[in-house]
Length: 199
Image 1: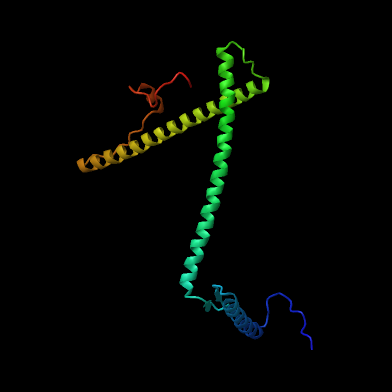
Image 2 (image 1 turned 90 degrees about the vertical axis):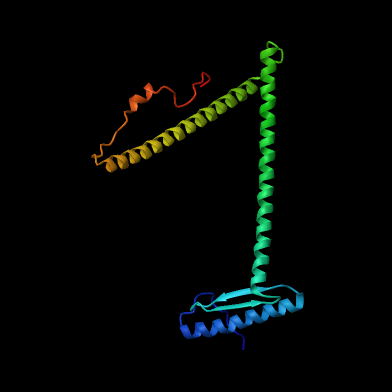
């Protein structure tokens, strides 16, 4: 008699579920052993039952060796993909920089030769866009540096306040916190950053 098609869904009856688990697990492990013998393949299978019990099969050697081999293989393939991606990104960056250098060289020739090299309108627009992007990067880098300097000064102020409080407590004096006035930073003998006329 032909066997009916089994629906692929969770078996609700726990007894039937356990029986099916045992039978199919045994069949899976048997097929893995056969495949390993017939094809000289290294096979590792790890199965956890619904109750958390572990079943494993390592056909050649032990499971630890197979897991290490898998980790080494997957790490190598991930490194190869990362190297490939980095190479493609580097090539794109090199091409972009070459284009920018060409545009800049044309711009310099135009300025020094009095327009003899005649740049096209598109090249001038590209040059202008590049200048805008570079100015934006320079300004954002300057703002980052200033923010870091301000944070360092705030940290230093907190440390000095804590040391002041500790010293006043040792002397037996009541601690009176000192708050700096933000407008007083203009009176500092040295500016926070070096002034530059370019920005």
